[in-house]
Amino acid sequence: KICDNLRIHPSGLGHFFPSKQLSFSHRVGYIEPLTTPMRHPDFCFNTSDRTALMDMRYMVHDFEHMCRNLQPTSRLVLIDLGASLSYHDGEQEVDADEPPILYLLRLYQKFGFRFDHIYGYEVTFKEPKDVYENLLPIEWMPAYHWINVGVSAKKGHARNPLDSILRSYEENDFVVLKIDIDSSDVELPLVHQLLEDDSLLRRVDQLYFEHHVKFKEMAPIWRSAMKGSLKDTFDLFYQFREKGVAAHFWP
Image 1 (cartoon, rainbow, N blue to C red):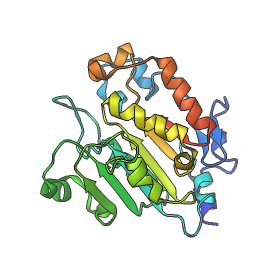
Image 2: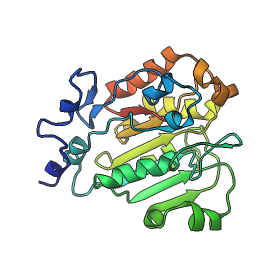
Image 3: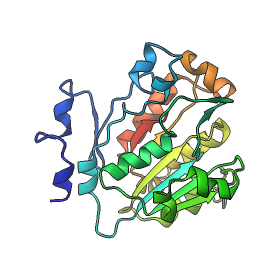
Image 4: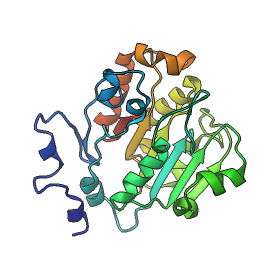
């Protein structure tokens, strides 16, 4: 009954996509198609438009399907690697209504998904007083763990969240993992560790990852972080989706 309330059309989510160009996973339902520009399509028409750059409405989340896979004991967890509670593009403020992670939290909350634990890893130092009094909305205070250290890509390391945090949860928990560290040397080993370890992969339901590859339109922003090609991106995300994880491009 509860999950029925999340059906946005009597025919289901697919009704809004007559082209049927959606991905589907038995674990998380429908997902937006994998296509360039790896963010909102409006970015194609004006690559200097910072609003289009950060617009996350291109993502498709099948909350009804996700709801039906929850168990009475399921815990809802978000692991945020690169936890920017205030958003900057270099030295410039990005024109966005709110930081992307807060938009995502509000989206899940709108459909009844309130996280029990939110782990925010961020290497750039911020005064805890500023985080908890100015940046973090009070509604998420009970669930939020601010971890103001860099992430390690070394397997088994205490600062490798896949080993120290993710492994502590069960397959029937609902886990969202966001990776946007802006360092390929750290991001890619973590992503491949996840992809190659089924015991970890079965614990992740939704993955958001900004893969910094060589992409002309994003070069002014990604700069030296760019490694690999667009083919590498599509191959990587396809593999995650083939294994049942809803892999989304993070803006």
